[in-house]
Image (cartoon, rainbow, N blue to C red):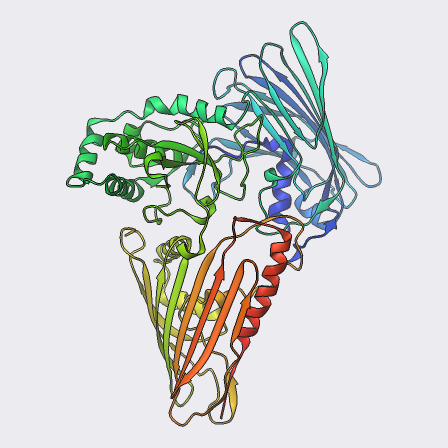
Length: 623
Protein backbone atom coordinates (compact mmCIF):
# COMPACT_ATOMS: atom_id res chain seq x y z
CA UNK A 1 0.00 0.00 0.00
CA UNK A 2 1.05 3.60 -0.56
CA UNK A 3 0.08 4.62 2.96
CA UNK A 4 -2.08 3.58 5.81
CA UNK A 5 -5.42 5.29 6.09
CA UNK A 6 -4.34 8.51 7.76
CA UNK A 7 -7.13 9.73 9.97
CA UNK A 8 -5.89 9.06 13.46
CA UNK A 9 -7.30 6.03 15.24
CA UNK A 10 -7.23 8.33 18.26
CA UNK A 11 -9.90 10.28 16.45
CA UNK A 12 -12.26 7.71 15.02
CA UNK A 13 -11.22 4.20 15.99
CA UNK A 14 -14.77 3.32 16.86
CA UNK A 15 -16.12 4.40 13.47
CA UNK A 16 -14.31 1.57 11.71
CA UNK A 17 -15.91 -0.76 14.21
CA UNK A 18 -19.35 0.60 13.50
CA UNK A 19 -19.04 -0.04 9.79
CA UNK A 20 -17.48 -3.49 10.12
CA UNK A 21 -19.27 -4.97 13.11
CA UNK A 22 -22.88 -4.23 12.22
CA UNK A 23 -24.60 -7.41 11.00
CA UNK A 24 -25.26 -7.27 7.28
CA UNK A 25 -28.85 -8.33 7.73
CA UNK A 26 -29.50 -5.12 9.66
CA UNK A 27 -28.31 -2.90 6.82
CA UNK A 28 -31.00 -0.59 5.49
CA UNK A 29 -31.50 3.06 4.70
CA UNK A 30 -32.95 4.27 7.98
CA UNK A 31 -31.93 6.47 10.88
CA UNK A 32 -31.26 4.63 14.12
CA UNK A 33 -29.47 4.83 17.45
CA UNK A 34 -26.05 3.20 17.14
CA UNK A 35 -24.81 0.85 19.87
CA UNK A 36 -22.40 3.51 21.13
CA UNK A 37 -22.70 7.29 21.09
CA UNK A 38 -19.87 9.79 21.54
CA UNK A 39 -21.06 12.22 24.19
CA UNK A 40 -17.93 14.33 23.96
CA UNK A 41 -14.59 14.14 22.22
CA UNK A 42 -11.96 16.85 22.72
CA UNK A 43 -8.69 16.85 20.78
CA UNK A 44 -5.91 19.28 21.63
CA UNK A 45 -2.82 19.63 19.42
CA UNK A 46 0.42 21.45 20.03
CA UNK A 47 2.44 21.51 16.83
CA UNK A 48 6.12 22.37 16.47
CA UNK A 49 7.78 23.98 13.46
CA UNK A 50 9.56 20.69 12.72
CA UNK A 51 6.26 18.88 12.27
CA UNK A 52 6.45 17.10 15.61
CA UNK A 53 3.42 17.46 17.83
CA UNK A 54 1.63 16.30 20.96
CA UNK A 55 -2.02 15.36 20.92
CA UNK A 56 -4.31 14.93 23.89
CA UNK A 57 -7.63 13.19 23.43
CA UNK A 58 -10.43 13.19 25.98
CA UNK A 59 -13.39 11.07 25.05
CA UNK A 60 -16.63 10.02 26.71
CA UNK A 61 -18.79 7.38 25.06
CA UNK A 62 -22.21 6.07 26.10
CA UNK A 63 -23.39 2.50 25.55
CA UNK A 64 -26.95 2.35 24.21
CA UNK A 65 -27.74 -1.36 23.80
CA UNK A 66 -26.48 -4.89 24.46
CA UNK A 67 -24.64 -5.01 21.17
CA UNK A 68 -22.70 -1.98 22.34
CA UNK A 69 -21.91 -3.73 25.62
CA UNK A 70 -20.32 -6.62 23.74
CA UNK A 71 -18.47 -4.62 21.11
CA UNK A 72 -17.83 -1.08 22.40
CA UNK A 73 -17.03 -1.54 26.04
CA UNK A 74 -13.51 -0.32 25.30
CA UNK A 75 -11.58 2.58 23.79
CA UNK A 76 -9.04 1.74 21.09
CA UNK A 77 -5.96 3.79 20.20
CA UNK A 78 -3.59 3.01 17.34
CA UNK A 79 -0.01 4.23 16.97
CA UNK A 80 3.03 3.70 14.77
CA UNK A 81 5.79 2.79 17.20
CA UNK A 82 8.62 4.04 14.95
CA UNK A 83 7.11 7.54 14.99
CA UNK A 84 4.86 7.80 18.00
CA UNK A 85 4.47 7.03 21.69
CA UNK A 86 1.17 6.96 23.51
CA UNK A 87 0.24 7.00 27.18
CA UNK A 88 -3.15 6.50 28.78
CA UNK A 89 -3.26 9.28 31.36
CA UNK A 90 -6.65 8.55 32.87
CA UNK A 91 -9.73 6.43 32.39
CA UNK A 92 -12.85 5.52 34.29
CA UNK A 93 -16.34 4.17 33.76
CA UNK A 94 -19.59 5.43 35.23
CA UNK A 95 -22.31 2.86 35.77
CA UNK A 96 -25.94 3.70 34.91
CA UNK A 97 -26.47 4.16 38.65
CA UNK A 98 -23.74 6.84 38.77
CA UNK A 99 -20.93 4.81 40.36
CA UNK A 100 -17.47 5.86 39.14
CA UNK A 101 -14.89 3.08 38.65
CA UNK A 102 -11.35 4.53 38.29
CA UNK A 103 -8.60 3.23 36.00
CA UNK A 104 -6.82 0.04 37.05
CA UNK A 105 -3.55 -1.17 35.56
CA UNK A 106 -5.06 -4.35 34.10
CA UNK A 107 -7.53 -2.35 31.99
CA UNK A 108 -4.80 -1.50 29.47
CA UNK A 109 -3.69 -3.97 26.82
CA UNK A 110 -1.08 -3.46 24.07
CA UNK A 111 -1.38 -5.48 20.89
CA UNK A 112 0.50 -5.77 17.62
CA UNK A 113 -2.29 -6.77 15.23
CA UNK A 114 -1.57 -9.55 12.78
CA UNK A 115 -2.09 -8.41 9.16
CA UNK A 116 -5.15 -9.94 7.56
CA UNK A 117 -3.29 -11.19 4.51
CA UNK A 118 0.12 -12.10 6.00
CA UNK A 119 1.72 -9.95 3.28
CA UNK A 120 2.31 -6.86 5.37
CA UNK A 121 5.07 -5.78 7.72
CA UNK A 122 4.27 -2.78 9.89
CA UNK A 123 4.88 -1.13 13.25
CA UNK A 124 1.27 -0.64 14.21
CA UNK A 125 0.40 -0.99 17.85
CA UNK A 126 -3.09 -1.00 19.30
CA UNK A 127 -3.67 0.10 22.87
CA UNK A 128 -6.99 -1.00 24.33
CA UNK A 129 -8.66 0.36 27.42
CA UNK A 130 -11.11 -2.39 28.38
CA UNK A 131 -13.66 -1.05 30.85
CA UNK A 132 -15.20 -3.24 33.59
CA UNK A 133 -18.84 -3.56 34.62
CA UNK A 134 -20.16 -2.23 31.31
CA UNK A 135 -23.93 -2.33 30.81
CA UNK A 136 -26.52 -0.44 28.81
CA UNK A 137 -26.28 3.19 29.87
CA UNK A 138 -22.64 3.03 31.00
CA UNK A 139 -20.46 6.06 30.22
CA UNK A 140 -16.79 5.41 29.43
CA UNK A 141 -14.10 8.09 29.74
CA UNK A 142 -10.46 8.09 28.70
CA UNK A 143 -7.69 10.63 28.31
CA UNK A 144 -4.66 9.76 26.20
CA UNK A 145 -1.54 11.68 25.24
CA UNK A 146 0.27 10.95 21.99
CA UNK A 147 3.73 12.23 21.09
CA UNK A 148 4.43 12.24 17.35
CA UNK A 149 8.20 12.60 17.35
CA UNK A 150 9.07 11.90 13.69
CA UNK A 151 7.28 13.66 10.81
CA UNK A 152 7.48 12.06 7.37
CA UNK A 153 9.43 15.08 6.13
CA UNK A 154 10.64 18.18 8.02
CA UNK A 155 7.78 20.55 8.73
CA UNK A 156 5.11 18.21 7.35
CA UNK A 157 1.82 17.82 9.17
CA UNK A 158 -1.63 16.64 8.26
CA UNK A 159 -4.69 15.14 9.83
CA UNK A 160 -8.23 14.42 8.67
CA UNK A 161 -11.31 14.18 10.88
CA UNK A 162 -14.19 12.34 9.27
CA UNK A 163 -17.68 11.71 10.64
CA UNK A 164 -19.13 8.45 9.41
CA UNK A 165 -22.90 8.36 8.83
CA UNK A 166 -23.00 5.34 11.17
CA UNK A 167 -21.95 7.41 14.21
CA UNK A 168 -23.37 10.05 16.54
CA UNK A 169 -21.18 12.79 18.00
CA UNK A 170 -23.01 14.95 20.49
CA UNK A 171 -19.94 17.16 20.71
CA UNK A 172 -16.59 16.97 18.88
CA UNK A 173 -14.03 19.71 19.50
CA UNK A 174 -10.58 20.19 17.95
CA UNK A 175 -8.19 22.78 19.38
CA UNK A 176 -4.99 23.36 17.49
CA UNK A 177 -1.97 25.52 18.34
CA UNK A 178 0.88 25.97 15.83
CA UNK A 179 3.77 28.36 15.15
CA UNK A 180 2.69 31.40 13.14
CA UNK A 181 5.48 30.89 10.61
CA UNK A 182 4.26 27.34 9.76
CA UNK A 183 1.92 27.63 6.79
CA UNK A 184 -1.20 25.60 7.50
CA UNK A 185 -4.28 25.04 5.36
CA UNK A 186 -7.70 24.10 6.71
CA UNK A 187 -10.87 22.76 5.14
CA UNK A 188 -14.07 22.71 7.19
CA UNK A 189 -16.88 20.88 5.43
CA UNK A 190 -19.58 20.67 8.10
CA UNK A 191 -17.29 21.90 10.89
CA UNK A 192 -17.52 25.37 12.41
CA UNK A 193 -14.68 27.46 13.72
CA UNK A 194 -11.37 29.05 12.88
CA UNK A 195 -8.70 31.16 14.57
CA UNK A 196 -9.55 31.97 18.19
CA UNK A 197 -6.23 33.32 19.48
CA UNK A 198 -3.07 34.86 18.07
CA UNK A 199 0.14 35.65 19.93
CA UNK A 200 3.47 36.95 18.76
CA UNK A 201 4.66 33.43 17.95
CA UNK A 202 1.63 31.13 17.75
CA UNK A 203 -1.89 30.85 16.41
CA UNK A 204 -4.69 28.74 17.91
CA UNK A 205 -7.65 27.29 16.03
CA UNK A 206 -10.84 25.77 17.37
CA UNK A 207 -13.32 23.69 15.40
CA UNK A 208 -16.53 22.02 16.55
CA UNK A 209 -19.17 19.77 15.04
CA UNK A 210 -22.24 17.81 16.08
CA UNK A 211 -23.88 14.88 14.33
CA UNK A 212 -27.09 13.80 15.99
CA UNK A 213 -28.51 11.42 13.37
CA UNK A 214 -26.96 8.09 12.40
CA UNK A 215 -27.81 5.68 9.63
CA UNK A 216 -27.31 1.96 9.44
CA UNK A 217 -24.52 0.67 7.26
CA UNK A 218 -25.29 0.17 3.58
CA UNK A 219 -23.07 -2.38 1.89
CA UNK A 220 -21.12 -1.16 -1.15
CA UNK A 221 -21.68 2.50 -0.31
CA UNK A 222 -19.09 4.98 -1.49
CA UNK A 223 -16.40 6.02 0.99
CA UNK A 224 -17.54 8.41 3.72
CA UNK A 225 -14.80 10.88 2.81
CA UNK A 226 -16.55 11.65 -0.48
CA UNK A 227 -19.56 13.24 1.24
CA UNK A 228 -19.40 13.22 5.06
CA UNK A 229 -18.49 16.14 7.34
CA UNK A 230 -14.73 16.45 7.48
CA UNK A 231 -12.01 18.65 8.83
CA UNK A 232 -8.59 18.77 7.15
CA UNK A 233 -5.60 20.52 8.72
CA UNK A 234 -2.50 20.17 6.58
CA UNK A 235 0.71 21.73 5.34
CA UNK A 236 -0.37 20.63 1.82
CA UNK A 237 -2.59 23.11 -0.08
CA UNK A 238 -3.92 20.36 -2.36
CA UNK A 239 -3.31 16.83 -3.66
CA UNK A 240 -0.88 18.06 -6.30
CA UNK A 241 1.38 19.20 -3.48
CA UNK A 242 1.19 15.71 -2.00
CA UNK A 243 2.16 14.34 -5.41
CA UNK A 244 5.08 16.75 -5.63
CA UNK A 245 6.35 15.60 -2.24
CA UNK A 246 6.00 11.97 -3.30
CA UNK A 247 7.93 12.68 -6.50
CA UNK A 248 10.67 14.47 -4.54
CA UNK A 249 11.35 11.38 -2.42
CA UNK A 250 10.73 8.77 -5.12
CA UNK A 251 12.47 10.20 -8.19
CA UNK A 252 16.06 9.77 -6.91
CA UNK A 253 15.36 6.08 -6.29
CA UNK A 254 14.42 5.34 -9.90
CA UNK A 255 18.03 4.96 -10.97
CA UNK A 256 18.80 2.03 -13.29
CA UNK A 257 21.37 -0.58 -12.35
CA UNK A 258 23.40 -2.82 -14.61
CA UNK A 259 21.24 -5.81 -13.68
CA UNK A 260 18.01 -3.96 -14.46
CA UNK A 261 19.36 -2.69 -17.79
CA UNK A 262 20.42 -6.19 -18.81
CA UNK A 263 16.97 -7.55 -17.91
CA UNK A 264 15.24 -4.84 -19.95
CA UNK A 265 17.46 -5.59 -22.95
CA UNK A 266 16.63 -9.27 -22.66
CA UNK A 267 12.88 -8.70 -22.36
CA UNK A 268 12.62 -6.20 -25.22
CA UNK A 269 15.06 -7.78 -27.64
CA UNK A 270 13.51 -7.87 -31.10
CA UNK A 271 10.57 -5.64 -30.14
CA UNK A 272 10.15 -2.33 -31.99
CA UNK A 273 6.65 -1.21 -31.00
CA UNK A 274 6.77 0.76 -27.70
CA UNK A 275 3.48 -0.82 -26.64
CA UNK A 276 4.92 -4.31 -27.09
CA UNK A 277 7.92 -3.29 -25.00
CA UNK A 278 5.69 -1.89 -22.28
CA UNK A 279 3.67 -5.12 -22.31
CA UNK A 280 6.75 -7.27 -21.91
CA UNK A 281 8.09 -5.18 -19.02
CA UNK A 282 4.72 -5.00 -17.28
CA UNK A 283 4.24 -8.75 -17.51
CA UNK A 284 7.69 -9.41 -16.09
CA UNK A 285 7.23 -7.10 -13.09
CA UNK A 286 3.72 -8.42 -12.47
CA UNK A 287 4.87 -12.04 -12.54
CA UNK A 288 8.25 -11.75 -10.79
CA UNK A 289 7.91 -9.10 -8.06
CA UNK A 290 6.11 -10.60 -5.11
CA UNK A 291 3.77 -8.29 -3.24
CA UNK A 292 5.00 -7.59 0.30
CA UNK A 293 4.04 -4.39 2.09
CA UNK A 294 6.47 -2.86 4.57
CA UNK A 295 5.10 0.27 6.25
CA UNK A 296 7.60 0.52 9.11
CA UNK A 297 8.87 4.06 9.63
CA UNK A 298 8.45 5.86 6.25
CA UNK A 299 7.99 2.60 4.35
CA UNK A 300 4.29 3.25 3.88
CA UNK A 301 4.93 6.48 1.96
CA UNK A 302 8.45 6.46 0.49
CA UNK A 303 9.27 3.75 -2.11
CA UNK A 304 12.42 1.67 -2.03
CA UNK A 305 14.99 1.99 -4.77
CA UNK A 306 14.44 0.19 -8.05
CA UNK A 307 17.66 -1.74 -7.49
CA UNK A 308 16.50 -2.97 -4.08
CA UNK A 309 13.16 -4.14 -5.46
CA UNK A 310 14.80 -5.84 -8.44
CA UNK A 311 17.36 -7.69 -6.30
CA UNK A 312 14.92 -8.86 -3.65
CA UNK A 313 12.03 -9.58 -6.01
CA UNK A 314 9.42 -8.18 -3.64
CA UNK A 315 7.78 -4.87 -2.83
CA UNK A 316 4.46 -3.13 -2.39
CA UNK A 317 2.55 -0.95 -4.86
CA UNK A 318 4.90 2.03 -4.84
CA UNK A 319 7.90 -0.32 -5.13
CA UNK A 320 6.30 -2.01 -8.14
CA UNK A 321 5.65 1.37 -9.75
CA UNK A 322 9.21 2.48 -9.01
CA UNK A 323 10.77 -0.53 -10.70
CA UNK A 324 8.40 -0.51 -13.67
CA UNK A 325 9.04 3.22 -14.23
CA UNK A 326 12.79 2.57 -14.22
CA UNK A 327 12.53 -0.32 -16.65
CA UNK A 328 10.25 1.62 -18.99
CA UNK A 329 12.67 4.56 -19.05
CA UNK A 330 15.54 2.25 -19.98
CA UNK A 331 13.38 1.08 -22.89
CA UNK A 332 12.80 4.68 -23.96
CA UNK A 333 9.27 4.97 -22.54
CA UNK A 334 8.54 7.74 -20.06
CA UNK A 335 6.01 7.06 -17.31
CA UNK A 336 4.94 8.45 -13.97
CA UNK A 337 3.66 7.14 -10.69
CA UNK A 338 -0.08 7.77 -10.29
CA UNK A 339 -1.50 8.14 -6.79
CA UNK A 340 -5.02 6.76 -6.51
CA UNK A 341 -7.63 5.36 -4.14
CA UNK A 342 -8.04 1.60 -4.22
CA UNK A 343 -11.41 1.35 -2.59
CA UNK A 344 -14.74 3.16 -2.62
CA UNK A 345 -13.63 6.80 -2.86
CA UNK A 346 -14.10 8.67 -6.15
CA UNK A 347 -13.32 12.25 -5.20
CA UNK A 348 -10.20 14.30 -4.54
CA UNK A 349 -11.65 17.40 -2.93
CA UNK A 350 -10.32 20.80 -3.90
CA UNK A 351 -8.28 22.77 -1.42
CA UNK A 352 -6.29 21.59 1.60
CA UNK A 353 -5.55 17.88 1.58
CA UNK A 354 -3.75 15.19 3.43
CA UNK A 355 -3.01 11.72 2.14
CA UNK A 356 -6.40 10.10 2.54
CA UNK A 357 -8.05 8.80 0.34
CA UNK A 358 -4.83 8.17 -1.64
CA UNK A 359 -3.74 4.68 -0.63
CA UNK A 360 -2.33 3.09 -3.79
CA UNK A 361 0.25 3.76 -6.52
CA UNK A 362 0.02 2.59 -10.13
CA UNK A 363 1.84 3.52 -13.35
CA UNK A 364 0.73 5.89 -16.11
CA UNK A 365 2.32 6.09 -19.59
CA UNK A 366 1.34 9.49 -21.08
CA UNK A 367 2.33 8.65 -24.67
CA UNK A 368 -0.12 5.73 -24.63
CA UNK A 369 -2.67 7.25 -22.25
CA UNK A 370 -2.37 3.94 -20.43
CA UNK A 371 -2.63 2.98 -16.76
CA UNK A 372 -0.92 -0.16 -15.48
CA UNK A 373 -1.04 -1.77 -12.05
CA UNK A 374 1.66 -4.40 -11.80
CA UNK A 375 0.54 -5.41 -8.30
CA UNK A 376 -2.60 -6.72 -10.00
CA UNK A 377 -0.78 -9.89 -10.98
CA UNK A 378 -3.88 -11.44 -12.58
CA UNK A 379 -4.63 -8.40 -14.76
CA UNK A 380 -3.60 -8.70 -18.45
CA UNK A 381 -1.74 -5.77 -19.94
CA UNK A 382 -4.00 -2.72 -20.19
CA UNK A 383 -6.61 -4.05 -17.75
CA UNK A 384 -7.27 -2.99 -14.17
CA UNK A 385 -9.04 -4.33 -11.14
CA UNK A 386 -12.62 -3.03 -11.06
CA UNK A 387 -11.94 -0.88 -7.99
CA UNK A 388 -9.37 1.15 -9.95
CA UNK A 389 -11.66 2.19 -12.81
CA UNK A 390 -13.12 5.69 -13.07
CA UNK A 391 -10.92 7.16 -10.33
CA UNK A 392 -9.10 10.51 -10.09
CA UNK A 393 -5.31 10.24 -9.99
CA UNK A 394 -2.36 12.43 -9.10
CA UNK A 395 0.27 12.11 -11.84
CA UNK A 396 3.29 13.01 -9.78
CA UNK A 397 5.93 13.56 -12.48
CA UNK A 398 3.53 15.68 -14.55
CA UNK A 399 2.21 17.65 -11.56
CA UNK A 400 -1.35 17.27 -12.79
CA UNK A 401 -4.52 15.33 -12.18
CA UNK A 402 -5.65 12.42 -14.31
CA UNK A 403 -8.41 9.85 -14.30
CA UNK A 404 -8.49 6.14 -14.98
CA UNK A 405 -10.81 4.89 -17.74
CA UNK A 406 -14.52 4.53 -17.20
CA UNK A 407 -16.03 1.06 -17.21
CA UNK A 408 -17.57 0.29 -20.59
CA UNK A 409 -19.82 -2.74 -20.37
CA UNK A 410 -18.51 -4.24 -23.61
CA UNK A 411 -14.99 -4.46 -22.15
CA UNK A 412 -16.12 -6.53 -19.15
CA UNK A 413 -17.90 -9.51 -20.59
CA UNK A 414 -18.53 -13.10 -19.60
CA UNK A 415 -19.93 -15.51 -22.20
CA UNK A 416 -20.93 -18.97 -21.02
CA UNK A 417 -21.99 -21.79 -23.36
CA UNK A 418 -23.49 -24.80 -21.60
CA UNK A 419 -24.57 -28.05 -23.25
CA UNK A 420 -26.47 -30.67 -21.25
CA UNK A 421 -28.10 -33.99 -22.02
CA UNK A 422 -30.87 -35.35 -19.82
CA UNK A 423 -31.22 -39.09 -19.39
CA UNK A 424 -34.56 -40.85 -19.07
CA UNK A 425 -34.21 -40.93 -15.27
CA UNK A 426 -33.62 -37.16 -15.07
CA UNK A 427 -29.87 -37.26 -14.59
CA UNK A 428 -27.81 -34.81 -16.59
CA UNK A 429 -24.43 -34.96 -18.29
CA UNK A 430 -23.08 -31.57 -19.22
CA UNK A 431 -20.17 -29.41 -20.23
CA UNK A 432 -19.53 -25.68 -20.20
CA UNK A 433 -17.11 -23.29 -21.86
CA UNK A 434 -16.78 -19.74 -20.57
CA UNK A 435 -14.82 -16.87 -22.07
CA UNK A 436 -13.91 -14.02 -19.74
CA UNK A 437 -12.77 -10.45 -20.36
CA UNK A 438 -12.09 -7.39 -18.25
CA UNK A 439 -12.68 -7.14 -14.52
CA UNK A 440 -14.64 -10.43 -14.30
CA UNK A 441 -11.68 -12.20 -15.95
CA UNK A 442 -9.29 -10.85 -13.33
CA UNK A 443 -11.68 -11.91 -10.57
CA UNK A 444 -11.95 -15.41 -12.01
CA UNK A 445 -8.19 -15.77 -12.47
CA UNK A 446 -7.69 -14.76 -8.85
CA UNK A 447 -10.40 -17.16 -7.66
CA UNK A 448 -8.98 -20.08 -9.61
CA UNK A 449 -5.44 -19.32 -8.38
CA UNK A 450 -6.41 -19.33 -4.71
CA UNK A 451 -8.61 -22.40 -5.15
CA UNK A 452 -5.73 -24.56 -6.37
CA UNK A 453 -5.20 -26.13 -2.94
CA UNK A 454 -8.86 -27.04 -2.57
CA UNK A 455 -10.24 -30.37 -3.69
CA UNK A 456 -12.17 -30.36 -6.94
CA UNK A 457 -15.07 -31.97 -5.11
CA UNK A 458 -15.41 -29.05 -2.69
CA UNK A 459 -15.09 -26.48 -5.49
CA UNK A 460 -17.79 -28.13 -7.58
CA UNK A 461 -20.06 -28.66 -4.58
CA UNK A 462 -19.77 -24.98 -3.76
CA UNK A 463 -20.76 -23.97 -7.30
CA UNK A 464 -23.73 -26.35 -7.43
CA UNK A 465 -24.93 -25.39 -3.95
CA UNK A 466 -25.71 -21.86 -5.17
CA UNK A 467 -28.71 -23.16 -7.11
CA UNK A 468 -29.60 -26.17 -4.99
CA UNK A 469 -28.07 -28.61 -7.47
CA UNK A 470 -26.21 -31.81 -6.59
CA UNK A 471 -23.58 -33.61 -8.62
CA UNK A 472 -19.91 -33.81 -9.43
CA UNK A 473 -17.58 -32.37 -12.02
CA UNK A 474 -14.18 -31.25 -13.14
CA UNK A 475 -12.86 -27.80 -14.13
CA UNK A 476 -10.00 -26.88 -16.43
CA UNK A 477 -8.84 -23.33 -17.09
CA UNK A 478 -6.08 -21.21 -18.52
CA UNK A 479 -3.31 -20.96 -15.90
CA UNK A 480 -4.27 -17.82 -13.93
CA UNK A 481 -0.82 -16.24 -14.04
CA UNK A 482 -0.43 -16.61 -17.82
CA UNK A 483 -1.89 -13.16 -18.40
CA UNK A 484 -0.57 -13.03 -21.95
CA UNK A 485 -3.06 -15.72 -23.00
CA UNK A 486 -6.85 -15.46 -23.52
CA UNK A 487 -8.63 -16.73 -20.44
CA UNK A 488 -11.12 -19.59 -20.64
CA UNK A 489 -12.72 -21.94 -18.13
CA UNK A 490 -14.08 -25.33 -19.21
CA UNK A 491 -15.97 -27.87 -17.15
CA UNK A 492 -17.60 -31.27 -17.38
CA UNK A 493 -20.23 -32.28 -14.86
CA UNK A 494 -23.00 -34.66 -13.92
CA UNK A 495 -26.13 -33.68 -12.03
CA UNK A 496 -28.50 -35.85 -10.06
CA UNK A 497 -32.10 -35.88 -11.35
CA UNK A 498 -33.64 -32.42 -11.45
CA UNK A 499 -37.18 -33.76 -11.97
CA UNK A 500 -39.27 -36.93 -11.78
CA UNK A 501 -39.86 -37.78 -15.44
CA UNK A 502 -42.28 -40.65 -14.71
CA UNK A 503 -45.18 -38.22 -14.32
CA UNK A 504 -46.09 -34.76 -15.64
CA UNK A 505 -44.11 -32.03 -13.97
CA UNK A 506 -41.81 -29.10 -14.41
CA UNK A 507 -38.18 -28.08 -13.96
CA UNK A 508 -36.10 -24.93 -14.15
CA UNK A 509 -33.15 -24.86 -16.55
CA UNK A 510 -30.16 -26.04 -14.48
CA UNK A 511 -26.92 -24.06 -14.36
CA UNK A 512 -24.48 -26.87 -13.65
CA UNK A 513 -20.79 -26.08 -13.32
CA UNK A 514 -20.97 -22.71 -15.04
CA UNK A 515 -20.61 -19.13 -13.77
CA UNK A 516 -24.34 -18.57 -13.31
CA UNK A 517 -23.63 -14.87 -12.84
CA UNK A 518 -27.14 -13.77 -13.79
CA UNK A 519 -28.78 -16.25 -11.48
CA UNK A 520 -26.55 -15.42 -8.53
CA UNK A 521 -27.89 -11.86 -8.61
CA UNK A 522 -31.30 -13.24 -7.66
CA UNK A 523 -30.17 -15.23 -4.63
CA UNK A 524 -29.68 -12.22 -2.37
CA UNK A 525 -32.38 -9.63 -1.81
CA UNK A 526 -31.03 -6.09 -2.32
CA UNK A 527 -31.75 -3.30 0.12
CA UNK A 528 -35.27 -1.98 -0.27
CA UNK A 529 -34.00 1.60 -0.22
CA UNK A 530 -30.68 3.41 -0.03
CA UNK A 531 -29.83 6.67 1.66
CA UNK A 532 -26.38 7.13 0.12
CA UNK A 533 -24.65 6.75 -3.24
CA UNK A 534 -23.08 3.38 -3.89
CA UNK A 535 -20.46 1.74 -6.10
CA UNK A 536 -21.75 0.17 -9.32
CA UNK A 537 -19.92 -1.61 -12.14
CA UNK A 538 -20.69 -2.10 -15.82
CA UNK A 539 -20.55 -5.46 -17.59
CA UNK A 540 -22.28 -7.88 -19.97
CA UNK A 541 -23.22 -11.41 -19.03
CA UNK A 542 -24.31 -13.78 -21.78
CA UNK A 543 -25.52 -17.30 -21.06
CA UNK A 544 -26.38 -19.87 -23.74
CA UNK A 545 -27.89 -23.19 -22.68
CA UNK A 546 -28.75 -26.22 -24.78
CA UNK A 547 -30.58 -28.98 -22.94
CA UNK A 548 -31.10 -32.20 -24.92
CA UNK A 549 -34.19 -34.02 -23.64
CA UNK A 550 -34.74 -37.80 -23.67
CA UNK A 551 -36.82 -39.28 -26.43
CA UNK A 552 -40.50 -39.42 -25.57
CA UNK A 553 -40.47 -36.50 -23.18
CA UNK A 554 -43.01 -33.94 -24.38
CA UNK A 555 -42.67 -30.26 -23.52
CA UNK A 556 -46.09 -28.69 -22.99
CA UNK A 557 -45.01 -25.17 -22.09
CA UNK A 558 -41.85 -23.08 -22.23
CA UNK A 559 -41.12 -20.08 -20.00
CA UNK A 560 -42.11 -16.81 -21.59
CA UNK A 561 -39.49 -14.65 -23.23
CA UNK A 562 -38.51 -11.49 -21.41
CA UNK A 563 -37.35 -8.18 -22.80
CA UNK A 564 -36.60 -5.62 -20.10
CA UNK A 565 -34.88 -2.25 -20.31
CA UNK A 566 -34.43 0.81 -18.17
CA UNK A 567 -31.89 3.61 -18.28
CA UNK A 568 -28.87 1.48 -17.35
CA UNK A 569 -29.94 -2.18 -17.29
CA UNK A 570 -31.15 -4.35 -20.16
CA UNK A 571 -32.11 -8.01 -20.01
CA UNK A 572 -33.37 -10.44 -22.61
CA UNK A 573 -34.18 -14.11 -22.35
CA UNK A 574 -35.32 -16.35 -25.18
CA UNK A 575 -36.67 -19.92 -24.96
CA UNK A 576 -37.01 -22.06 -28.07
CA UNK A 577 -37.28 -25.75 -28.89
CA UNK A 578 -35.52 -27.54 -31.73
CA UNK A 579 -36.72 -31.12 -31.81
CA UNK A 580 -35.79 -32.60 -28.42
CA UNK A 581 -33.44 -29.72 -27.59
CA UNK A 582 -34.31 -26.69 -25.49
CA UNK A 583 -32.36 -23.53 -26.39
CA UNK A 584 -32.08 -20.79 -23.79
CA UNK A 585 -30.32 -17.48 -24.37
CA UNK A 586 -29.94 -14.80 -21.71
CA UNK A 587 -28.11 -11.48 -22.05
CA UNK A 588 -27.79 -9.02 -19.21
CA UNK A 589 -26.20 -5.63 -19.93
CA UNK A 590 -25.44 -3.32 -17.02
CA UNK A 591 -23.97 -0.09 -18.34
CA UNK A 592 -23.64 2.92 -16.05
CA UNK A 593 -22.06 6.22 -17.12
CA UNK A 594 -20.05 6.28 -13.88
CA UNK A 595 -19.15 3.92 -11.06
CA UNK A 596 -20.95 6.11 -8.53
CA UNK A 597 -24.66 5.35 -8.56
CA UNK A 598 -27.51 7.11 -6.78
CA UNK A 599 -30.39 5.82 -4.62
CA UNK A 600 -32.58 6.31 -7.70
CA UNK A 601 -30.26 3.99 -9.65
CA UNK A 602 -30.67 1.47 -6.85
CA UNK A 603 -34.46 1.61 -7.20
CA UNK A 604 -34.05 0.61 -10.85
CA UNK A 605 -31.64 -2.15 -9.86
CA UNK A 606 -34.22 -3.57 -7.43
CA UNK A 607 -36.81 -3.69 -10.22
CA UNK A 608 -34.36 -5.38 -12.57
CA UNK A 609 -33.49 -8.05 -9.99
CA UNK A 610 -37.19 -8.86 -9.63
CA UNK A 611 -37.35 -9.46 -13.40
CA UNK A 612 -34.23 -11.65 -13.29
CA UNK A 613 -35.66 -13.65 -10.41
CA UNK A 614 -38.88 -14.31 -12.32
CA UNK A 615 -36.85 -15.58 -15.27
CA UNK A 616 -34.54 -17.68 -13.11
CA UNK A 617 -37.48 -19.41 -11.44
CA UNK A 618 -39.47 -19.96 -14.63
CA UNK A 619 -40.04 -23.64 -15.40
CA UNK A 620 -40.38 -25.93 -18.38
CA UNK A 621 -43.64 -27.90 -18.21
CA UNK A 622 -43.56 -31.49 -19.50
CA UNK A 623 -45.49 -34.73 -19.64
